[in-house]
Structure formats: structure tokens, C-alpha cells
Length: 199
Image (cartoon, rainbow, N blue to C red; front, side, top):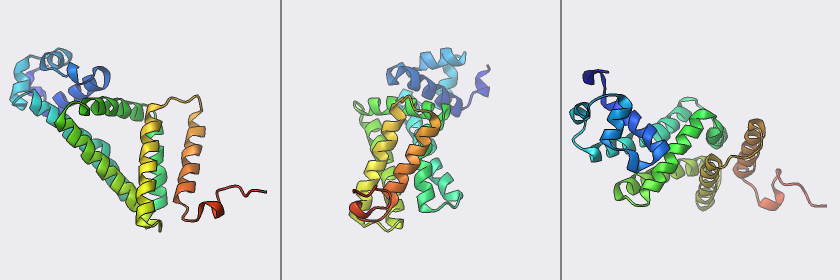
């Protein structure tokens, strides 16, 4: 592959593939050049340094895994309840969700020891939680309760992306929908229509 045919995005894509399988320490110019079957010269045409590439990875993740997802939900003109269901189903979307989870696991591990990655992860977490919180506010939950529920849903989404249950995909989808029904219903717990009445 000729160096002029490789774009900045090609290098970032290759870096994210390596990140998802080998971790941040494997994201090296030599490793990427070998994977892309190209010389190092192409890299320095697009990036000033490895650090510049790492920033590109974080920018791409922020856009693809957060801003684009939220923009896509808004474009569908879904209700707040429907958007909540869609979000809770995201970790169950097959190969794409598995790939996204692999990248996110590596990013969070990287963020434990790198300030730039930590800042990006914190920013994305705040942005995602704020979006979910607003969905609950739109569903008539008080602000403090909406914030608590947003943390709960976000924690569920992260945990679901890490787990590999024996349940069928249809059962997992049904569970996510039941949970979204339960959490979005704005009523006292003891009177909630989704809670079986004690006899």
C-alpha cells in the first residue's frame, strides 16, 4: 500500500484495532506500520508524534462511541422512554457492541495510569450520564432521582458490555426492556405497576 493512500483515519483505525486486542502499550508506530504493511514515513506525514496519535484515538472514541450515538437517537425522533430502551439495548448489538466494549475496556485500563486518557474518559462519562439523566427528567422524575437513575442505567450498560451470560439474546433484550419499564415509571416503589403486589 503506497504511503500516500493511507490517511490519518487509517492509522487511527489500525491503532484502535491494536488497542482493543493488545492494550495501549502495543499501540506503537512500528507495530502499526507492520500491520498496515507500510513504512514509518507515512505515520509522520499525518502525526507529529505517538502522543498525537493517542489524542486522535481519544477524539475518535469520543465522537464514535458517544456523540454519534446520541445524535443518532435524537434524529430518530424517539420518545424519552424509547431512547432509554435503545440505550439499554446498545451492549446487546452483537459483534459491533463486542468490538466497542473491547476498545472501552482497554481505554479505561489506559485511563488508570494516564492523565490525558483519564480526562477523556471522565468527560465521556459525564456527557453520557447527563444525557441519560435528562431522559429521566423528561419522564417527570425529580432532578436528584433522575441523577441516581442515570448512574444506575449507565452502570448497567457498562456491566452488560462486560458480562457474557448464558441467556439467549432475546432474553437479554427482554430483560433490558423490563428494566427500562421499571426504571422509567415515575411512581413510589410500593405502588409501582411493574412490581407484583404482595398478598
